Image (cartoon, rainbow, N blue to C red; front, side, top):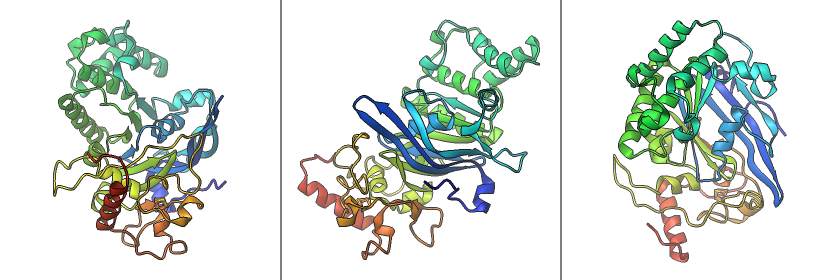
Length: 370
Ligand code: SF4
């Protein structure tokens, strides 16, 4: 397996985090689950990278692998996670950190905001105690007074009145609990925050408030974010760049603009047309027929081929690799044979081609279009 970076040296220097060829397996009694296979992504300094895909695409496993929070039976079977500190020339290989180095790395360089605030917060401890615990563990030189001041400052930062600091989690609204989790994640001013579906359990109004808060904080504090969600429409409003995942692999990476204008992978097109547009011209919703594969038994060749309306012979036998899709969009990488001149004599598909193919696929299937 290759272990080098897939990024050019100039791109690498502006990146704060790179994941190179990362693979994760779960040893289950019913067979090996290939949760991540050869995944490479990069996070640029100060940017928001969105990870999108259906359930089981590997996005949460990727977030946990980067933070080294995976527990047995999950095993990282290959690859690298490189963190580029702003004050050093050499990257840090996160997967090689010793337990004490890892403790120092987590929270102060990279922190994580989990999916459910109610589960992430300790229900029997006041907010003040939970923030204080983090500061005491990681900043032992701080006095009690300094920790109290910092806790108040953190709450103000995320829009919670400091007089709520002695509340228990159940005394806070869902939005306030999620803001509290973000405050705790910011406690040591990390350079990277991984957010795993941070707004899923919230109603749309509170969701909007939290997203606005994340954007405001990112601009104020200049941290970088990996934002994990199945909601691609949300990422299009929030992220700078998006990586689309399917069956444990990245199938396309692009800026939001590139992805909205011309998705290259048939799966990306299907995802983009699974929800109505809020702004701009309306498009016809197509959805994606079928279901994601069982990760113990991933289809050979391109894993998407049983659902892909543009699949042809080579797709079921040859595995595509991430490659540049077009000269004019050098940062838009796609894993699809349609962009490999050695395998496809067809011209590269346009949105109209994708739409026609999906229409034809629906005409032949029993899947009801929404
Ligand atoms: Fe579809 Fe083939 Fe491209 Fe896979 S490689 S997305 S099956 S056209």
